[in-house]
Length: 110
Length: 112
Image (tube, rainbow over all chains, first blue to last red; front, side, top):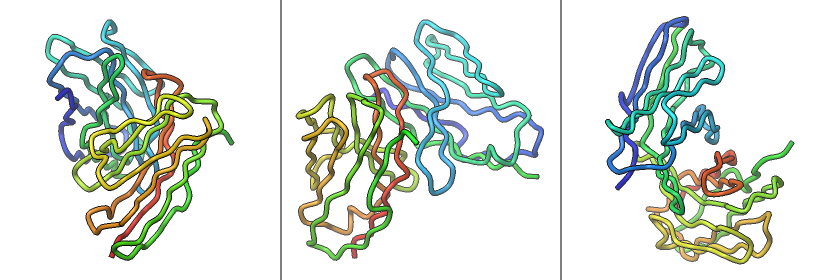
């Protein structure tokens, strides 16, 4: 299975700190996406990174992809209470459906 | 606002009852998906559609049926609800296979 697995399962940090969560997968992929889910809401697409890319930025978000290690990381800089949510990675190959991992629960404490 | 709309938002069913969940998108997306989300298990794909009139099975299709008669709508049916189908159901759509998914806000279903 190419399912991504996020690590850690849960993370608590103070406001203003950086949060890093990782996603590992088992087989080669074409692209990887990160999503955020606030409690009781649907998932929101954050960023997509292709297998030929190593790093992408979007505001306070930085995503890296290391295809040799079959892993990706999501860094949220200068975290805010509003960043409290679950974060999911989804891995995919052309013509196949994306597979979501179980997620990382991030708590940002004031 | 453009997006994915799911109805209903909440529903309680008795074992053996049937129901249909409706998903509507106004972004002209080709692909549509139905997922279920259970604690600690992430999202699991039930059925999906790559265009009007097409449907296909996902990871956990048993006990569910779907239809995509119009491009903007994707219906999920439970013919005979079971307690194991208690879950939160999400619909999503995308422009193509690689596009970022747009999710609805979910339907919380309880089967008693």
